[in-house]
Length: 162
Image (cartoon, rainbow, N blue to C red; front, side):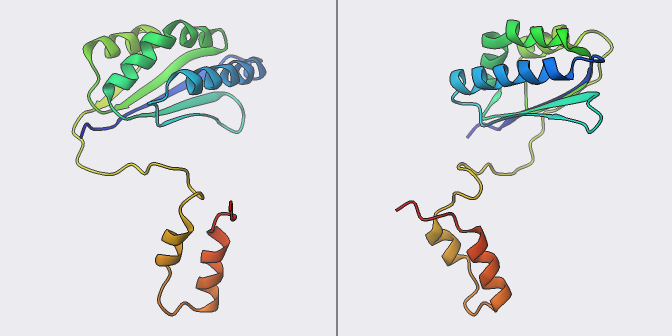
């Protein structure tokens, strides 16, 4: 089994461009979701004062990240109309030389790039939180739950889709 590939990029947002960035990101998310079925997770967060955005991507392997960079490189570069600069890039997994070079070009010189290639272990859950099989949730209950425990398990069960 190949190791996951995780990308975290943090960027400063140009003054007055937060709303433009939000619109751009909605388009980008839709494009990524429609065209990259292997990508496990793709999220963008903005700090409270709207001056910094962080993109988090979880790929099943480095090849998925390479595909992302090749397929959407032009669209990704359009973000810099709203982003002032890349502040840092973190990579977890082993990128190809081509992917590293593309990241450096997009980010610009002088941007800290941290690459951690030694994956010690872990797991990836497939499926969405809160949509687990109710039988699995029931099996996870203690044999003699107290009222509080039973209520908390009932609260996390998904609705019957019967």
